Image (cartoon, rainbow, N blue to C red; front, side):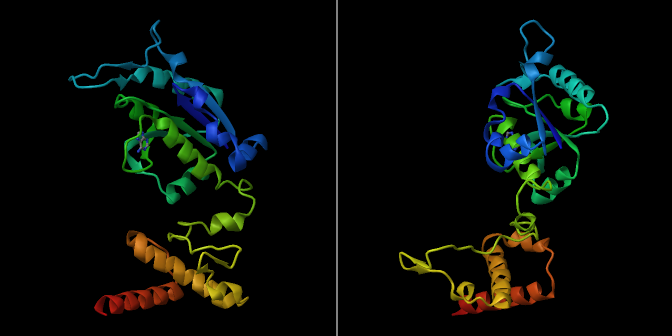
Amino acid sequence: MRIDVVTIFPELFPGPLGVGVLGRAREGGVIDLAVWDLRAYATDRHRSVDDAPYGGGAGMVMKVEPFVRAMEAVRAAHPVTQPVVLLPSPQGAVFTQARARAYASAGRLVLLCGRYEGVDDRVAPLVGAEEVSIGDYVLTGGELAAMVIIEAVVRLRPGVVGDDASVAGDSFAAGLLDFPQYTRPVEFHGLAVPDVLLSGHHEAIRRWRKREALRRTLDRRPDLLDDAALDDEARALLAELRRAAAEHRRA
Ligand code: ADE
């Protein structure tokens, strides 16, 4: 997978993408990360990439021409594969695991990082970019958001995370939160590992994990249950959990 990042801070990359699982993916050639300096595509001799907003107001707006010229260079560097182009922005559609899966199936991804108060609104339509937000809060720039998106996407590529079962069982893979995990020691500061996990009874463990994943999702993120893919067993477990919760409230 080829990933291009356009930024006024190329020195921020690879940063966290250079270590661990992602670092190995780069070394092993599973991903090819190229970083482009937006300033190199500025059109004036001061290399300006931002200007005052039309209509007035505080702050600066990132100019359209450098992004469009940079994007021409990015496309020309690999003219064969049509990239998915992303513009991280708090105004975008929220980035989810489903989006991560969709982007992971693309051969090529381009991320355009904005800074300051915003990016000229003509950039996205002119370069064919989708705006994506990593959550309802505001960062100073798109670079950290781009890293978050790249990290979530690349780990879904085959062979990046050693154990494919580990990716398949992630939170959100089935639209639910993860069940709780424990390792040694069996008791610490008065907190014990649930007995069922020590029982060696695989069927009981499987069912317990499914119930706990549902319990956590119901407690912490009930909104996820609307879209989760639940089989008959999960629906029955969930009904049980809801009944127990209702009884608990009455007591
Ligand atoms: N740039 C600034 N804030 C952002 C956010 N929440 N998501 C994506 N890009 C951003």
